[in-house]
Image (cartoon, rainbow, N blue to C red; front, side, top):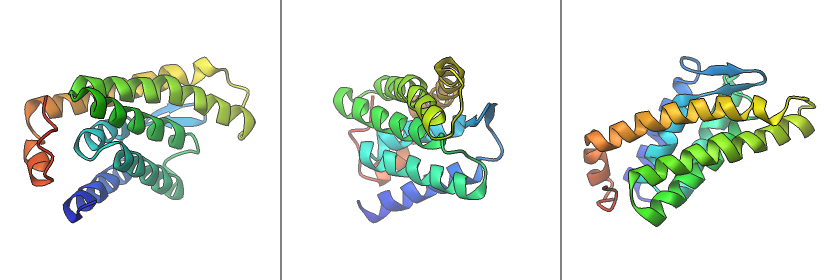
Length: 168
């Protein structure tokens, strides 16, 4: 990873960590975080699936250390970032990254969060308790990222990082 890409990834981690206490949706033992999902899509498009997953992991770590997240922050954010990056890599359009984030976080991540809650946290909540809030959160954040990408607001960042393939 080049210095500029690493710096941008660090900036995303900082923004994700610092805004965690400002905007979130409480859902039982989890906290849904739309800014995380916007960051996931942006990182997936600009940096790729591996770095996007690493950014999601670091934000989840810092949120847990600072008490603004829960153990359930890991599956939703990381699976969503990975799926968004893989979908964008394969289809090369913003809509596919958004779809990857929504399916990865909202459905797969919600189901994995239910498994973690059931077996690790000894919570007896049903899967439907996690999937709808995860879907709502990820859809909102993904739409924000899509609008930023389509508006051209991040074109300068993409150009500076040397990723001209990140266009729709």
